Amino acid sequence: MFESLRGLGYAPATAIADLIDNSLSANSSKIDVQLEWAGPESWVRIVDDGGGMDDAALEAGMRLGARDPRAERAPSDLGRFGLGLKTASFSQARRLTVASRRNGGPTVCLRWDLDLIGQEPGAEWPLFEGPAPGSEHLLAPLDKMEHGTVVLWERLDRIVTDGFTATDMIELADRIEVHLAMTFHRLMDGQQPQLRLLLNGRPVKPWDPFLIGHPGKALESPEYKILHTTGVTVQRHVLPHRDMLKPAEQEAAAGPGGWTQQEGFYVYRNRRLLLAGGWLGLGDGGKPWPRDEAHRLARIRLDIPNSVDAEWKINVLKSTASPPVRLRQQLRKLASETRETARRVFAHRGHITPITGMRSNAVAEAWQVRRSAQGTSYRIARDHDLVASILNRAGSLKPDILALLRLIEETVPVQRIWLDTAEDKETPRTGFVGAPANEVMETLSSIFEALVTYSGLSPIEARERLGRTPPFNQHLDLVADLEVKDT
Ligand SMILES: Nc1ncnc2c1ncn2[C@@H]1O[C@H](COP(=O)(O)OP(=O)(O)OP(=O)(O)O)[C@@H](O)[C@H]1O
Ligand SMILES: [Mg+2]
Image (spheres, rainbow, N blue to C red):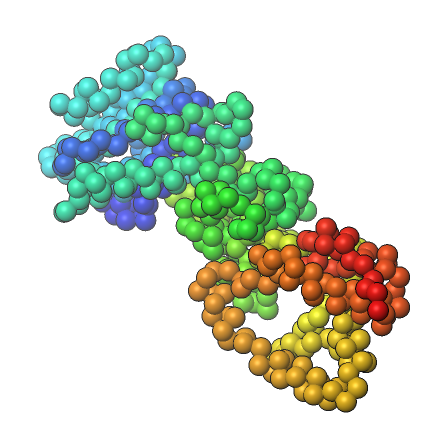
């Protein structure tokens, strides 16, 4: 059975996270993970300063199904199935040694060794007492502790495979660090973090997917409760556009999987991350939303307590969760709103104006999007103040100008824009970003003239209206300089 359970699908990082869960459930505040390269003798060790186990607890803990998954657990318990210690360990190693001590009591130590199970036909339950001969020194950290637990993996046959070298071990340690920094970030954040996590002696720095408190964020909603649940809460976030982040911030904010992999829901159970990104199969018209560039700035934090494990279909690996059907509609709605904000931030490179309020008194948009059964088309608004004023003054040129507008509309390089957006992972530059002030001013003063002389606004009104109109609302200094030209 142990041999079969090896294939549950743990990666080294998820397996280690599962052991850290156990340490946290035992109230550890310092957890020390060490990966030691020694060829086939390589080992992985997790030392925690938690409550530890006595003889009976350790013996129970070493068995499969150590606890009934239906039993109620303490709210801070990260376990559920009574399997993790064994399944996570054997996914990577053939030998598992656990040594523990509770309250200054004696050290107790038990060991599973897959190579020795079934070796002696008549043997009893082959759970050995004590470390493997020659590995005693690896349990030494426990000697100096009042209470705590050491979990040791040896014979790492699923890690140290043919051709695996010291360099691969270093890369593996990096991947594990990234995973732990994300999975346990909530426990390591803040002034007085609950957890100090070390990997090969170095503190793991938490990775916050939400850039909490960043001034460039377009949305950081309050935390609110999901209706008809006990203790499920949500907080919606839209991250700042790339243009509003320093290069180092950008890379850090993207996260281990990159921007699109990391968009969507973040499901936490007792503040431990289960699922990072994705849209939980929610979508429009029965079609799940894919993770795409346009919505990559949306991240939604969902917190669930361990009392809803069965309802949310938590798996043994603690790597997935799936919302109950009755909550899907509610989650879909709030995801949809968050996605819409994220899409607008992406499309306007961070310069978004609220849909209501400010916009109402702005100059009409130059481009109109028309959707019909035949498809979407883009049209230059004939009633835009500048367009209307030019057409009015055009005289005999009017038919030609209309033809020109039509030509522009019919030849918008849609394909090109679409390809470039996909390739650059960024919308092309528009809205005078990076343009010199005099160029902005040329366009601005033409529209200003149109507003004053054609639309009949006072200069003050015209300036005010332009100040509310993107992209000119980014150039209020230029707007303030607008004057009626003497003719
Ligand atoms: N580091 C530790 N400190 C103290 N007790 C531990 C530790 N690791 C495991 N245990 C004990 O061993 C038991 C079995 O652990 P195991 O990970 O197999 O199952 P679980 O945590 O109960 O559930 P899950 O399968 O969801 O992880 C735990 O319930 C706990 O009582
Ligand atoms: Mg566990």
